[in-house]
Length: 299
Image (cartoon, rainbow, N blue to C red; front, side, top):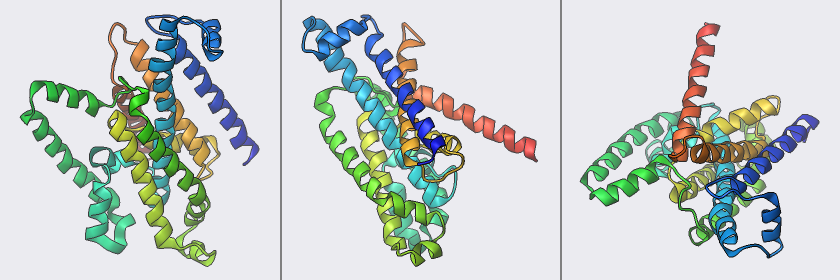
């Protein structure tokens, strides 16, 4: 790890910790740092313990974990496809979990990386049409619940809902740590990676599977939160000075983006609370507009 990457890693960790602290203490009931400390020592009022340990803490931890998972998933796909738009939400995996990958593998076999973006966008459009039809056909109560979930929200996160998702995400992140070196070598080109002893096709398939699992598990819990997987790896690449495959930075950028979006969704529009996905879509839209403006100026 270079000094630059190490410094930015430290800053991102501090920013995540600060936002986590603010999320734990701000709200309808303001909680001081002394009360937080008492709760950590097993003391404090029961109502404050309930709010901190059962309501706010799982939300904060899952925002950090899911943000990190989406950031790494985006880094995987952008690395494999060698395309800055190759994130799981652009490909359609947020809409249909792993449907895009299955169609690409079954229909296009050896040309997965060349066709995956086009196939993903097409599958995403078809699945969005199917989703719209299902919502229209559902009862009002079911449609409202589905609509809230589809916007992407951390509302209602409790410890009872998190164990399966935490287990899947941690396992996928562990496997990703074992395959991180292979991903860096694949970025040098298939021929170079093969010459260095990397089983290219098998490694690519495992990496793609891990990326899909990270996205699918996150989406299953909080709904499709767009643009975190797109933005986090690109911010990480710029912070790392253009170094590809900076997975720790991508994870921290994803965690910071999601917990910041969640904090903004809860507190910036009071008395209303917005879904997290609305905030991330705004950020992603601004980012894409900035890219278009920059490309127009270059031309």
